[in-house]
Amino acid sequence: MRIMGAGGYGNDLRERIVAAVQRGATITQVAQQYEVAHITVRTYLQKAQQGTLDHRIRPSGRPRTVQPDHEQQLLNQLDTHPDATLQEHARMLHKATGLKISYRTVDRVFRRHGITHKKRTHGD
Image (cartoon, rainbow, N blue to C red):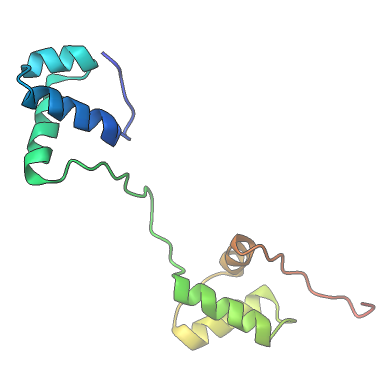
């Protein structure tokens, strides 16, 4: 029997397992043929009946604090205040939206958009 991680099996295998049982094979036969546990076959049959066989991996971990509209606000701020520090951008975002984030988070948002935020020196 294969040992799978938390991700489970893909849609193709799930559909083949269900189809094999629907063609008349027993749960034991299908489990042996596809090297999965009996409970896996039973679960996929139940999910197929409920219409929820489709495998979608849920994002792991904590959801992002900074939502797309916050990111857009930061990018707009960068256009209107190009010389502001990361700390200043964090303060402006807090004032505009109520979301309080650190300057490090502002830096991560900018980097996700391919922006490295460097202040210009007076000689530039």
